[in-house]
Structure formats: structure tokens, C-alpha cells
Length: 228
Image 1 (spheres, rainbow, N blue to C red):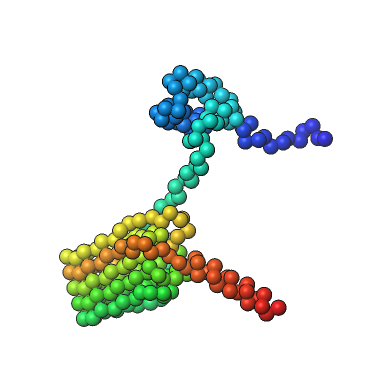
Image 2 (cartoon, rainbow, N blue to C red):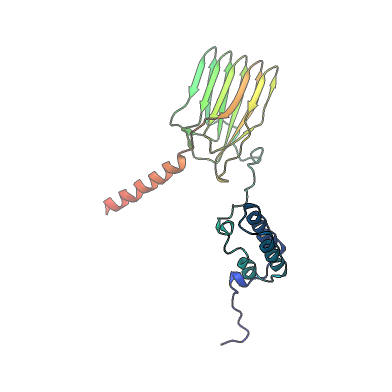
């Protein structure tokens, strides 16, 4: 055996950090407040925490407390960017929704492109993405409302950003971040001139394109198996 060979220490043998001690002290403080520890027990354990050298020594003081066995909360992910990176979205639209002295609706099961242009001139446009398929993580909706109304609805589990404004009109987009950092981001851009543009989540609706992709993958695998 090579005497110089080093073995990886077990997690419990690692040296404890100040953050590790603070975490254990917080659990002890909570246990004292809940009546799980007496004041003397709490003081004795805190004294031991301050002198502990390894993670394993710290764990001894909270091993019998429920809070020590709860799953740790994952650190929050970075919020969605305020605007898409330069060049990420093409200038030409993949789709246009136009209402001039009329109403236009895009809803149901449809495939959302990277850029969608919406024009409401003395009319109304509704763009409902709550059942749409997202092939791209970033979608820009460029909306122009002149004496009209543009309404954008998105699933609850996507991020939403507003980039535009109003000229004697109303531009209102709910800013929200999805829990999943890989979730689609919808940017509503444009101007409301004596009109209205708004973006809101549709409660109870979640993006389903991930499930759709999984189903397509299963279908392809099944076809390959049957073709053998």
C-alpha cells in the first residue's frame, strides 16, 4: 500500500465551519422555543457546539431533534433576466396576430414561436399561452395597442417580464419568476397608445410542453421497437 495515498474523509469527519455551527445553533434555538429542550439542556448543547471540531461532533447535539432530519431547502435560483440577451431573439416574427376594428384570438394547443407580434388598432387581441407548446425557453411578444386592447395570458409555471410602456395608455405586466430555472420566459414588449396592454398568469394552468416531449420520445421508442 502506498503510504502517500490519501483516502477521502467521511462527511462526518470534515472540519466544521462557522456556517455549520450557526445551522446547529438555530436548530437548538428552535427546539428550546418549542419546549423540546430545557434551558439547561440548551445551554449545555450550545457550549458543546462552540467547541466541536467536526461535522460529526456537531450532529450529536441535534440527532434527537426533528428539525435536524428535515430536507434542507434548495438555494434559490437566479431570477429570470429582465430582457433576452442581444441577438437571442430574431427580429422577424414567427407569428402575427392583428385586429383592426375587430377581435383576434390565439389560444388552445398551439406552438409558440420565439417572437410574436400583436397589433390592436381600435380592436382587441387575446394571446393565451396557457395550453401552448414552448419549443424555446425565451418568447418575446411585441405588442402595439392604439385605441385597442392586447391581453396576454401565460401558465403559472413560467417567468413573465414586461418591457414596454404606455402613452396616455396602460401597460401592465405582472413580473414573476418560475420555481424551475429552466422554465420558459415570456417577455411582453411594446406600447399602448391610448389603449391597454396587460400580461397575467392564468391560475391553475401549467406549461405542458415538457410532458408532450416525453410522450413524443416514448412514441418514437415504441415505434422503433415495433419496427424490429
